[in-house]
Image: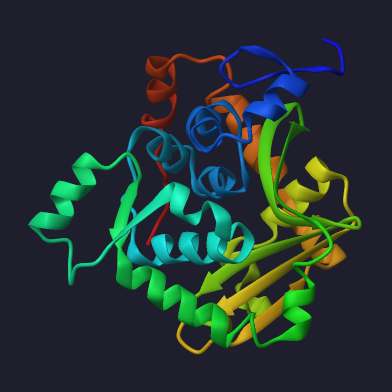
Amino acid sequence: MSNDTITLLDGISWNKDELMSNMDSDPFYFGHLSKAALSSSTCKHLLKSSISYYQSLTTKSKQTDALLQGSIFHMLTLEPDKLDQRYEFFDAPSQNKAFKERAEESDKEVVLLKHFYIMRALKKKSLDRCEYASSLLQGGLEEVPSIGLINGIPFRGKADYLKNNHIVDLKTAASLDYWNPRYKSKYNYDIQPYIYRELFNVERFTFLVVEKFTGRIGVYEASEECFESGEEKVRICTDRYKEDFLGKSDKEIESVIFNRYIHGTV
């Protein structure tokens, strides 16, 4: 196989340039590639267990208000011109009958207008007021995709903001307290910086985190220790994928992962 092709988890080989151009499409990136390549989010499932990963592929997850608002904030900050292309904001007190009818008719994702107002207010009291935080999102490119092999397994990633050998990842959080270093292992924050360093060949990775209710801002730089612990976790994930999933049919996968058990004493 040449350096210009990459074989995905479904066994299909792509010209890398063609694959990269397709990754600009959200349905392709979040749809097809969600099963055809690993990512930082799927690695978190694999790290927990093979069953957790398998269920993430076979069970449709429900979108919460927190995830929806995070997505709106992300687009409002990085790609405001695309906001109306993706969402139709519906003015209603709740997801009532009129809302549901409109959601069935529209070719966009219909969401309550209040979510937009909440996130617009959050941006005004956080990023719009902090010069340093705003400067992190200037002078580069937003939403840059990449794909490559890590430990022989295809991984996908999309850099929120890429500039000068540096990736800035924008997140919203219920509390900055959960970004204390002692939570790094619990929430596996270290996986994404390592994967993105490999995919984008950058040296720096920074989390730019906005606390939802207060607008407090946290800027967290990935340390070398973070990259090293992330590398070890990704190695565990790729080894687990190769053992339990690679080249196996759904029936073979289920036979392997659902016949395991944990034996211990209490």
